[in-house]
Length: 362
Image (cartoon, rainbow, N blue to C red; front, side, top):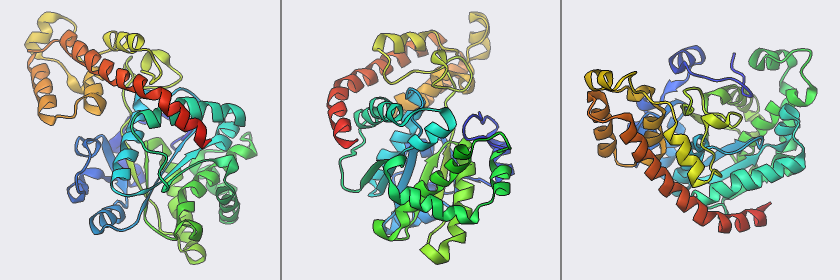
């Protein structure tokens, strides 16, 4: 069972086998100008992505939907979602961005006011500073608690969901509060409401998520089928991206400061974290030169792959020199620190204007 509010998925192969997620590499060749997250295998799985490749190749309407639960700081691992939204925006997709303040209250006890504050200052500002244009007419940014279309749809679709089904998907038991049990229906409504007549009617919808969110995807696809006759819903598509390894070797998490580089960290703090991060280096200099490094176990190399180096040839050269023992960990850390410094300098320069835009939206 996968817990969307607390699981840490690390066995991607078992996950795909157990829940029927298809490999993304099977469709990447059909995608025009596929992003580096796609070509590098960071996006590893998909459900029904052919609907999206068809829309991309035929220049047909489609939507991209994502949600943020404002419960903590935004770290560099979250940048993957922004990068995907930017790519889909360039491809002409309508964007739907849900601030899950009702979920944050039910699952974390965070008030609506606090949710708005976190969403504004930690998420929306960084989304804008990272280059997402949220001012376009086809971008729909909203708080769950203030979107009547989502709340009404959640109530309607709840008619065909039983507690037994919710328990089997999410592990809810007699101690689970009713508000928490209700939040998956809000997630489903977030994903399906772009297909309501008010928003242009049925269309393909892609939801880029981490694998811990797959229970919501499975429930949504099931309910889309059950309400197809009433609303004409098309089963939404989904992609699944790998979690970033934390700087300590575990999953990167907002609740573990040493594991994560927060996007609001100072340049000094961010580069300091890089220089103290766990690598895939051997125990001694001699062993490193003889056996080579282990880039697939290195949080620094992962940082380069996910965010800091766009040139595949440059990345392959770094990997090759690591494997051969020619390059030592200190060199890679220095490279990553310099590139991260450039990224954070650009973020800081754009954040003040991004703050003004964000405040005008919420």
